[in-house]
Length: 294
Image 1 (tube, rainbow, N blue to C red):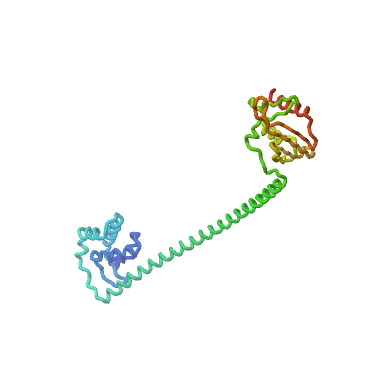
Image 2 (cartoon, rainbow, N blue to C red):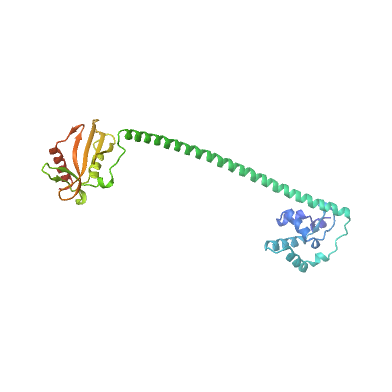
């Protein structure tokens, strides 16, 4: 009895030893049935010669090499004729029925195993979806906070624009006007200008930058332009380091010098409502000229 057990194996045992799913072994047996003579028994007790392991291993190798079933059958017919020639014990219809049932049960068992793996994968996918949904909700919350902050900032900017619009300060000089050399009149029909950096004329925008960039202030300046006839008025308000409020107003107009040069002429400079005299303007321009090296 021990010899029979070791010489003949079930399909499940063959699959276990070879590391091949039982359903695959059953398929091999059904597809190439004439090469698998049974040793007897019925249903799950049906056994096959131990040499069948070599046959199944060979079939597996040929399938892995992408052989067709017809090619495999031709190969087996030439190399495994001894199994085909071996006479299997006669089987009765009663014995054949349990054999088919056993094969069906084995397939059902494999399907149940696969179903378990499928359920496991579904659970894993559900967990991943939950994580993605949570991350999406957190991202939407962050974006919502950023949008609200931007909306608040936009509302503040709109308020400032409305205030500036009410005071008529939304206008801004064109670039060619800002590039005009800034000059003061000497009272004798002459114009005094200043050479700035790189020996270039000291322009209106340079003067505005000096006012805006002054370090002796406690708060950023509020600088506004407004159209004034043929010229432009610069209005700057700030608070000095000592806490004193200051307002500087500069009135300019485009004119042409006797030498045919277009310039921006300072018509008035007032500090806190007091107009600076012409002598002070000349002194200011001389100081600016000296600060740029003469």
